[in-house]
Length: 221
Image 1 (tube, rainbow, N blue to C red):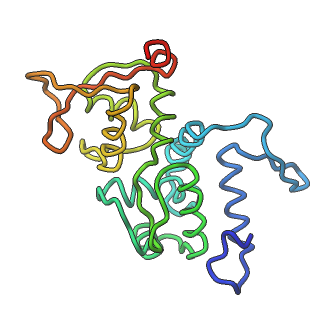
Image 2 (cartoon, rainbow, N blue to C red):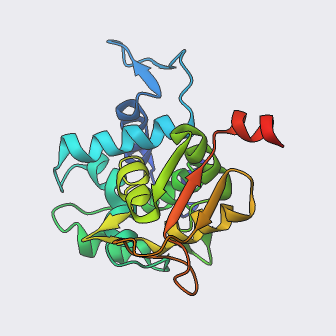
């Protein structure tokens, strides 16, 4: 419990209960009739977790439900504003979700879980929402072999797993993370002339992506 405690004093019972319910909604644990908790035998990988988060966001659609808030904070606070870093996440969350009060302890727990799930890093008291290299590699492995316009890749392949598109604009954190993989063997970014889609990169030089599965990369190394 102390790992989620924002201050040394106080009662964090409600926090623990919220985290348990959140893990239950993710399908990571079971709770029987006697309120006994056990982990699921089937181990969820990080992509499974993000797919479950997307399902929670779609199925609940209730701004006063803590699980809905936890599942949509990344999209609502970072993606929609295209903001990589938020220092006072407690204030911004309560300012956005006004139908329920979210404690600092719950925000602290969210930051820890989202860092563990690969969506970013706790930094200087806030949260830096730059998806981690391992998460993006796992995402690429999950998607598998694919080739097409880079913007379509973001919209059709990445967004259903990690929400990253708002009003046709792709979140910079996802763009930076994907471009960072261009130096690896798993993706290749190129440019095709007269393609009716947005280009990306420091000089808007990329608009086409080729994704290779990990097995394919290993085979042709």
